[in-house]
Length: 190
Image (cartoon, rainbow, N blue to C red):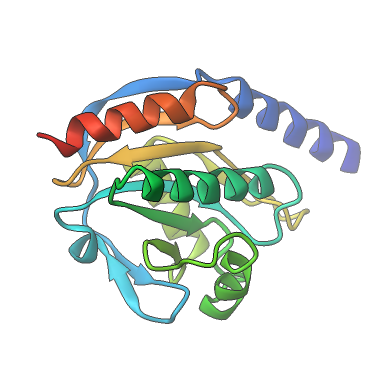
C-alpha cells in the first residue's frame, strides 16, 4: 500500500510540475477572504484592496517543492524592491492544523528578514483551504491520510489592484520571473 501511495504522490507531483509554465487566466475576481497571518492578526482581501499581490500555496513540513518555492518568493521580493515595485506576497498554508501563526513566523524568518509585504496565512480548516484553492485558483490540494505530506500546486498567482486573478506562473519555468515582472509593471500603470 505504501508503494502505491508513493507512486500516486510521485505521479501527481510530476503532473503538477509539468503543467504549462505560464498561462493567462480569465479575469476572475478572487472572492473575499479573511484569515490569520504569521503575527496572529486578521489578514485578507480588505488589507489587499488596491494592491498588487502574488499568491502561492506552501506548508512548513514540506519535503519537496516548498523549499525552492520559498527561496524563489524571497528572491522575487528582493528583485521587486530593487525595481521599486510594490507587491504583496500571500502564502496560504495547505496544512493549517500544523501551521499555526507561530510556526509560520519561524518558517518565514528562514527566508526573509522583511515581513512587511509577506503574509503567511492560516486559520482555516483543511477542507476550507482545499475548496478555496480549487474555487479561487483552480489548483488542487490533497492531504492523504497516510502521509504528513500535502499534494499541492507549485504556481505563483498574480492578482491586480482590483483583486482580479490575472495569470499564473510555474517557478520551474526559467523565464517566469522576467515575465512576472513585465506583467506587474504593465498592470501597475493601468
